Structure formats: structure tokens, C-alpha cells
Image (cartoon, rainbow, N blue to C red):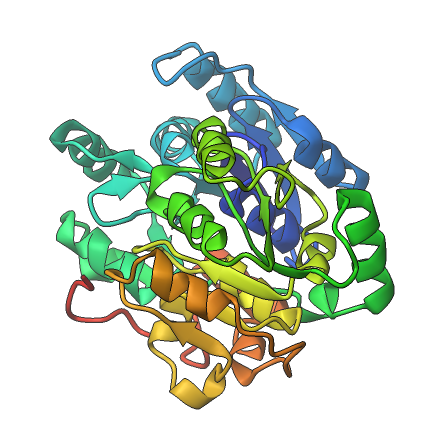
Length: 373
């Protein structure tokens, strides 16, 4: 059986990290994981699923001592494939895999935005290092046509980029009234309250401050924000200043996204740019109406594949968001768009790529020829 080592920067709460944990349950190959930094709670969960996790103890971006440790791990494991995830892991992982003589090196680009990567501003040096190490790999997987177009704009040849979208397990998010009641009791939210919310890393590009200001204009609504990140303290201060104390709940990072979604009545995704929009798909799988701005997972699909996902322009302000979030529609049917991204199919696409095959032309859509704005 093909043996694959997944190399990732860390295993904290984040979209790429949770996507890897989900993939590991469905990939038809033997997998291990190496995290450059800490494994954390998500690493413990992966271990409980029977996957070996190696922690390499990297102390910072320039801790070069991690490179020989990673090379030794790869050589000792005799892996057929090294698959890297997130910028730092892609840079170090590709170099280490090449030095170790790994026959196939795959990278997934999860978080390349317009002028930023993983929520941080890109510079000429960042792009140059990315291009230099990308040449050491076999193929780069973009999670959406949007990301593929950005990779080409960075100078990555089209022939070295393929699009395999993120995947979702719709059954895991199916709405359960008992789960909703338990989550609301745990979070201190009244059962009859109208709750708008979101899930994700709290960074400036997510524009969660817009959601906080919109909630302050919606007197009969509660606000539920699940996630952590550098913006959390500022967002909590804004909420307090706007009088949302008692109406806004910040959960921090969570491993139980289905319960958080069950507690909501409408999901908000105000980010003006995204690489995929997995949170939107998870909310739709939970039967939630969605208000969103950017979501590449939906942007290329016909409107009738996600009829309850309302798109607001990037320029829409708090009043427009307040009006959209205040609508009470109840649970809605899970739309066809959700089932386009079934995790088993995406895992099968990756397995084909591991053995040198090309992805199928089924639901994996080709990259656009223009760069989205």
C-alpha cells in the first residue's frame, strides 16, 4: 500500500488542519503526519483515529534545525509520497523530501489570498521563496480555481497546478434538535433566541468586526462567534463598546463545529476574499441559511445549487448585513452544492495523484483563466 507522510505547520484549530484530519479518515492509503510545531488537541484526535503523529518542535519560521530532523524522519519512514500543507510546511517539507529522495512530493495550497497568505501580507521575498521551493515538488493542489489562478499569477506553471477542492462529510453536520438544545444550554443562549454566527480563525481578512457591528444593529439577535486568533481581543472590545455584552458569545477554538452550527439560526461569512469557503458549505450542510460575500466553492455554481446562500457585495455595510441576518427563515433543505464536495470523492482524487495519475475530470473543476478580484 502507498505510504504517505503529511507535513503541516501545526495542528491548531483551522480550516486546513481540520481538512487534513477529515482526509485522513477517508484516504485509501497508509498515512502518518508530521507537524513542524505542536500537535495540540487536533493532533490528539488524529492519534485516536489510529494515525501516527510526529512533533518536530520547530520554534519559529527561521528555526532551520527542523530541516535535518524532518529529513531523518522521511528517510527512516521510506514514504512513497510526502504531502505538504500550509506555507511553512510547504517550504521546509519540499526541501526535506527532495533531500530524502522521496519519489513523489505533493503540496496543497489552502490559504493563498489576494495579497496575503494564511492571513498575512505577502512580500516579494515570500513569493520568491515559494516559487523556488515549489519547483522541488511534483504537483501543487489548489483547493479552488481561485487559488489556482493566484498560483499562476505567482509564476507557478499551469502544468504543475491541479484543482482538487476541499471536501466535506455532510452527514456529520446534519441538523439535530437535541444537539441544538444541548449546545444552547452549554453556551448560555436562550432556546427562543435568534442567533447569527460564524466559525473560523479570527484574523482581519475575515472581517468579523463587520458582523459584530451588524449584530449591534439587530436588537433581537444574539451573536455566536466560534474560533480564535489575533483579532479576538479586539473583537470582544468592539462588542462590549457597542453594548453586546450578554448578547455576544465567543467560544474560542472548537472541535465540535456541528454543535456550534446547530445552535445558530443564520450563518454569516463576511470575508471579502476566500480560498474556498468550507465554513459556508458546513453551514449549508447543517440546514442553515447563509449570508456571505466571497466563497469560491459556490461562486462558479449555478444559483439554484445553493438557493439559501445570499451573497452581499464586498462594499455592503453593517446595515445591509443587519437586515440580512435578522430574517427568520428556520432550517432550510441541504442544497445540491454540498454534495458536490463529498470528502470520499476528493480523497479518491488525491489517491490517484499520489500514484502519478491525473485527477479525474468529474467534479474537480478546471482552473479559471482569469484572476478573480
